[in-house]
Image (cartoon, rainbow, N blue to C red; front, top):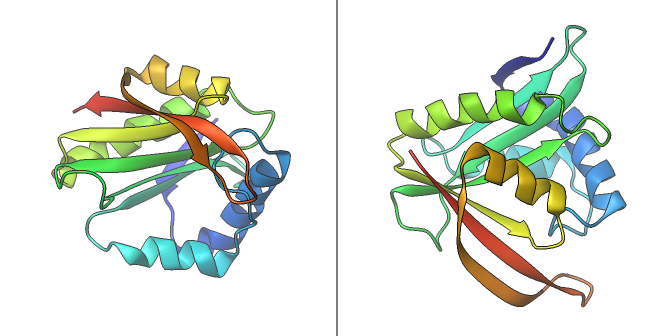
Length: 161
């Protein structure tokens, strides 16, 4: 069974481990450099009262994935940005759906009226995930540079609360 709970600083190490596997695999996140638990803790503290972090775990407490929302300078104040990461090999098992149910509620509680998701155009799984949640494309940025010199198209999708 999938359990969703708020994520906190104590969860930073397993969350960094999960994210680093995804970063190392490449192709689904714009992040190209590994993250540390300290970085995740800093991200969690960066926007108090305007962000929400949740994680999914199984009955044994194994981390399956995590998701967060936070404000972004490029978005209006009534919008938040979302990031979702699910353990490789565990997609399409309901983890992302369970996370989004909790995140959507948190976004409403925090006073947001819509959620932005910006996804690499070559991340077909991520695009399908956000599409299945009801996100609609509103912008496409072409040839966005990534660290290391590669470029990707980035698709921005919107979910109205």
